[in-house]
Structure formats: C-alpha cells, structure tokens
Amino acid sequence: MLFKQLFEPESSTYTYLLACEDTKQAILIDPVASEIETYLDLLEQHGLSLVYSLDTHVHADHVTGAKLLKERAGSKAVLHRNSGVPCGDILVTDGCLLRIGSIEVEARYTPGHTNACTSYVVDNMVFTGDALLIDGCGRTDFQEGDAGTLYDSIHNQLFSLPDDTVVYPGHDYKGRTHSSIGHEREFNARLGHKQTREDFIELMKHLDLPYPAKIDVALPANKACGNVDADCKK
Amino acid sequence: MLFKQLFEPESSTYTYLLACEDTKQAILIDPVASEIETYLDLLEQHGLSLVYSLDTHVHADHVTGAKLLKERAGSKAVLHRNSGVPCGDILVTDGCLLRIGSIEVEARYTPGHTNACTSYVVDNMVFTGDALLIDGCGRTDFQEGDAGTLYDSIHNQLFSLPDDTVVYPGHDYKGRTHSSIGHEREFNARLGHKQTREDFIELMKHLDLPYPAKIDVALPANKACGNVDADCKK
Image (cartoon, rainbow over all chains, first blue to last red; front, side, top):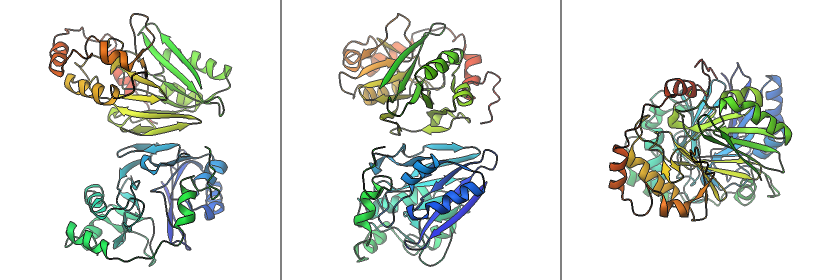
C-alpha cells in the first residue's frame, strides 16, 4: 500500500493519501481545498485514480477539498450521514466498509467533537480526525459537541482497538505525526487511564477557548463539500 | 427519474433499474447474472452509466449479476456488511445513504430472512428484497434466518414508512408487481394487523418448506459477487 501523510500549515491539518499499488486506486482522508494541486500532482506522479475523498467531519478550521476533487479527479465525497451535507455521495453510518483494491476502510462513528465525526480504520491504522488527537482531543463547545459523548466514543470505538494501532490525527500543533492506541489509552493528558469520565467532562467545561477564527467561512463551505460560495447542487 | 422493473422468470426475481435523467447515472437493485445482456442493452439504449449494483441480500435462489456488472459496466457492488462478501465494494450498515445524481438511496437493515438483508428506500418506494413480499415474506429457516427478527425488522423498519410508500419486492410468484406499505401493514396474511409476533413465529415454524433447489450453487457464487467458480479476488 502506498501511504503519504501531508501537512497543511495554516490550519495544521493532516491529510492522508492511501493507494492500492495493484489497482492504482486511491483515497484521500481530510483533503484541504488550498492543497488541491499537490494532491493532483501526487496522483499523477504515481499513476493513481482517486476513488473517494473521505472527511472525518464537517471541519470548522479549514475548507475541505472534496468538491474540487469530485470535479477534477472524479472522486466520490464520503462522510457521516449526520453531517447533513447535501453534496456527499456516500453518507456512511457506523460499521460501513469501503473497499478500494486491497484497502479496506471501516467507518467508526466517534461523535463528541461534532455530531458527525467518524474515524476510519485501515489495517493497523486509525484516522481519528478531531476526535482523538495526540495527547489531547477535539474541543466540544460547538457543532453539537458534547464531552461525555466524546469520552464514550474514544473509549468504546478507539481505545478498544489493539495497542499497536497507529493513531493518525486530523491535526497536530507541535509537529508530532502519529501516536498509538496503547500510548494514548495510557498517557493522553485528557483521556489517559487516570482520567475518569467525570474528570474529562469537568476539564472540557473549563477550557475557555476562543471563538474559532475560520468557523463562519468553513462551516457553510464544508456543508457544500468545500464550495466557498456555498452553492453546491451535486 | 427513469425507473424499470424487470422480471427473471426462472427464479421469479424482480430487478430494478433506477437512473437520474440529468446525470445519466444508474443503479440496479438485485441484478440476475443470466440477464446481464438485457441490463447492458438497457444502459446503452438510454445512454446510462451504472454506478452501483445493490443486492438486498446474499440470495439462495439465483446468482447475482454484481461481478459481471463490475467487469462489464464498471459498477461497484453494494450489500450489507453482514453478508461477509469479500468482493463487495461498499458494505453498508443501517442508515447509510448513497447519492447518484438526484437519486438518494437509504439502506434500512431488515434482517430475519437472512442476517444480511437490507431494504433500500428511494423517494416513496421501498425495495424490500425477500424481507417483505406481497402478502407474504421470505422464509426464515436458513442463512441465520429468524422469525422474531424478521417480524421486528418489518414492523420497525418498513411498516414505519408512510402508508403510500410503494413496496417493490424481490420476488413474486403470482404476477403481482408492487404493493404499498399501508396495504401490507393491514392485509399481509402473515404480518398484517391481526397477526401478533407470537402468531408469526408460530406460523413460520410450521411452513415445512422444501430444501431450496439452488442454494448449494447460489450461496457460494453469491458470496463471490456472482462468480459461479467462487474465485472472486476483487
């Protein structure tokens, strides 16, 4: 399997390219609109055809490349049904599987940061979006966020994976690229083994975070698969 | 929307073609392998591109055309995750949505005839496979069938649809093409309003049906998307 982790510095977003080397079919997880040329170059360079772009959720901090990729690479836009995104092609629910050549992607519903968050499991990797971050987690104070729900999602849907599952988050602000389920279950400052559900809810209540800088642009655009004019008809 | 109901007489199977007239994208529900040329002719005649073939379950009475359609029309094979079919491209779970042009298909998990039965809702139509038949239902004595589960599926997932939802079944043996949810909820001989769950379980226990004639060929073939040599690698 071809695997690339890409970084968009303005929003510190990680995007992931996975491709089956036999069939030359590829997927992108959490593509960023501003990076579209990089993705198209990579696809061309490796002779890949993009089958799906998957979003882990409706992002509040950057604009998804889903619509541009539909138009320019012919891919289908995938995200959770609760996203309510009318231009999504495949709206998954918990447990859905997508197969792309030899790659099998399992959707695990992990709400709490938003009500449409989904993590994607591929082999021994899990792409956690903004649910589980390295030594942290997504905030829970907008988009139907809920700390108790996030705690349950992470414990039931992610910490139940094997210890050596590699965690690839949606963001990192300190240059870290990956972690493991075993490490996060033990040491994550907010969710590690010493933190109870009540501790976590209390902690999340008092983070006192600023209003997200890009949310007023990003949310309507992402509800239209990344169309900043929010006029996505298909 | 272009809509065609097709009939395969040997197994009395109904297959459904739905297409978006704007985008010329199409889906087939429960295609039969022996009828592949009919489907390809229809697609060509209307200038359609087949995006998905959907199976309502792993059939025991006929061989699906999913694999032939993948090869000859480039479609993706869709069925429920519980089917355990390794060559399925999209393995849905309850509530998944697939959008094809202006067509939105909702998967509703309706186990009981088999453990992988899914009905598909499109607008005011529901394609019920072998869960709900006209004035009857699928048998429950093989493939993890269970009468109580089927009763619950039909009541919770199908009879909860509006009265005027058109029921398009997977088979009919008496020449009937469709019914409605309102009619079946009231008059279905096995599941209508006079039948309790206990009545239904008791009735299904004593049907005394013969061993399905084609099951030994159909099941392994359908576990391989319709490859009668059961050697489907993708």
